[in-house]
Image 1 (tube, helix red, strand yellow):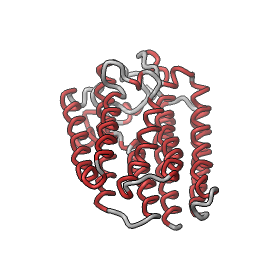
Image 2 (image 1 turned 180 degrees about the horizontal axis):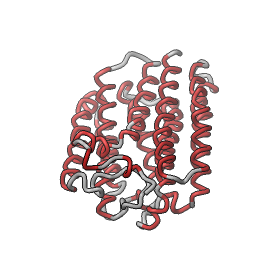
Image 3 (image 1 turned 45 degrees about the horizontal axis):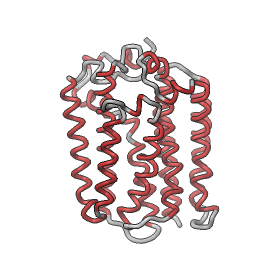
Image 4 (image 1 turned 90 degrees about the horizontal axis):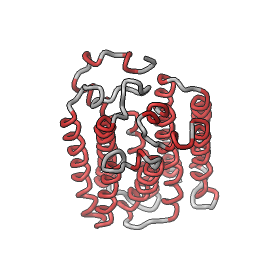
Length: 305
């Protein structure tokens, strides 16, 4: 099989390696990147609460891991993760971890996110309670529940909303207990690049998702249109990120994000021309690197104002 399953015998994996596979580290930049952008924007206004920054970062990471584990568990139950899928082995479907342990780890991850959120609720009020509860509920219902929206083509919208708009504006709100229009605008490119990671994943899994009746957006609109969507999402990230600079809120330093254009162009070309698992698995990792690099440079540009 043209799959990462053949690259390593599952029996040779340690417990730590198995749980790292379950956590899906390639997706974790989507959790950290928006917190960096929202917090750095807040820093342009005044001093930071560093404990709040750490709590927000860890909370976002635990929500991402919990969502990944919930997805692993639910996809296995629904038969979406089979031996035919091109991506890395999933721990539940692959028999590496008993389903009950994966479910327990899911609850534990979301529980840790709640603990991180307690301090944020204390300093920022009930708004953060609503944000946290909505984020966790959305993570569970992505592939869980009676009608998971990840199976209905709304996964990209979920990622854009919660790993873009909510995460950036929420990180800003934690620091300032207020919101400015720049926070909403800068959340758009972050959400677009986070969603683009999922688009690569769904392009790779299109055929197996179709056979499992998992109606992702890629399944609904087809491979060619999904590739075009990916290119548009990545391309739109750049002008939206520079809009506050164009409108006079910042100096030219946010233009540092343009340094990531070569990564973006290469990634668009690869996704547009390949269907094999190993190449798209590598593209998935590069999409995460693109988002993190973009957000780190945007963060630096904001801090240099």
